[in-house]
Amino acid sequence: MINTMLLQCYTALDAFKHGHGSQALFMTLCRHLLVAAELCQLGHASDFDEDITHAHEALVTLDARHVSTTASGR
Image (cartoon, rainbow, N blue to C red; front, side):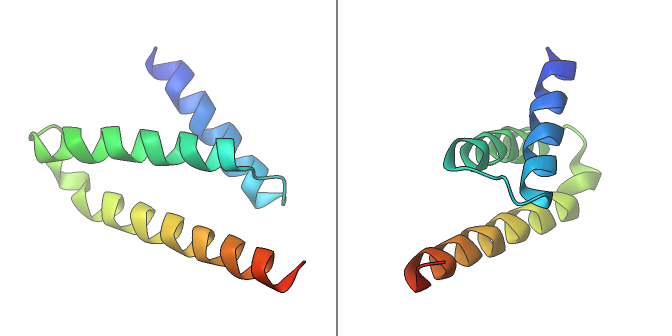
């Protein structure tokens, strides 16, 4: 199960990297980030808390780019 979850994340990240992201892939990344954040808060791998914060910031930036691109009609 863990390998499947990682594969989904890597596939979504690769798609965005190559300009082929979608709302469904964005939501996949968000769901996995939420799970990781919850596990971190529960004390599992809490040393990765800063990585969770950076990942959240990256998703916020990605979403903002999508909104601005959509608004400008690109």
